[in-house]
Image (cartoon, rainbow, N blue to C red; front, top):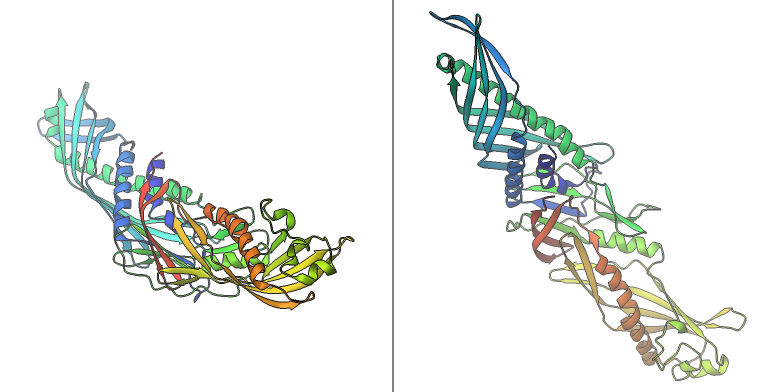
Length: 481
């Protein structure tokens, strides 16, 4: 049953990731959309898995009595029933508005072989039989729900199976006798098979599929500091051709979570159907990350002389700063310096068609390190940085890259007289280009995970940038294990 559990749930329910009721009126940070192509692919994988499971059905023995003129009464038994071949030819998976999904199999075939026994008075005979089952149709509705913990649930709210035609070929010493009432035997076989098929499907959904869904986490760890909440905010929205899943997609400090003071924007998704799945990821996701790292002080910077490359002729000392601040070297001769930078507020990533950018405002304060180890403040600067961002994604992760641009500097306060701002800008730009940006880009290259279940990889991706959100489309490959 495990193969069926994985195949039916990886796309149908796995992309839902978790169900966690949210407040009405709050917009999702991420919308996962499964298109008709995605549902078609999931139906095919479900059909393959179901075909495997049907081979494993243990059909029960059955017995009966017969009465034939001039022969009298007798007793028969069919046993050792074994499904020898199974071919499921057609499958569909369609949304059920307000419920979930409808899974159906049609135009399918099963061949069963087994043995029979007949007892008439003291006479006992036996033989074999071959059963051809044609025109099998299976329909099941999958009801999607959630637990209070935010974990997903699934049940088969209804299941039906129908067999259009069944033929029994009985061989052996009294095979001709059993063929006299083959209609009764075929009817019994049909009843057994229809019941067994639905029972197998319902058990698999309520146990194996449900158990597989329970392995899906409500949160995913990004690094040792932050995690992302991929809980579902409401029931999936089903339309005639797609299934939309609303995820919270909020990044938070997993040691100290606090409420976010802003809401996710409303996203107007394009009507795209070329890919199996689409992810609409709002700026809310990235801006909650910025807020978390800002509050924790991760966006602050500190520059000391030992951080300046040894090959640099400009050192972070009062002597080296003589050309930038003439009075500094006279007032504080041969002393080391330190620059402390802090972002004034959490920098938010701006999305506009075809463009990603952010403009952090930074305040930098310079200190002289006195012989007594006291830090003496000497000047304060305001720094404006315009940064272009490039986002990409691989088989399961979103990654980023910041494109360096020059900083602009403004003198806020000076306790050491005139300052050559142009030279100071050159020093800061050098540090940002060769130290700060590489560190940030190394972290962004690690990326954060998309809400995907196990054994799923994305391929053939497309990326669009819209106002307030990214729109990522991809096809899906289920990696069989």
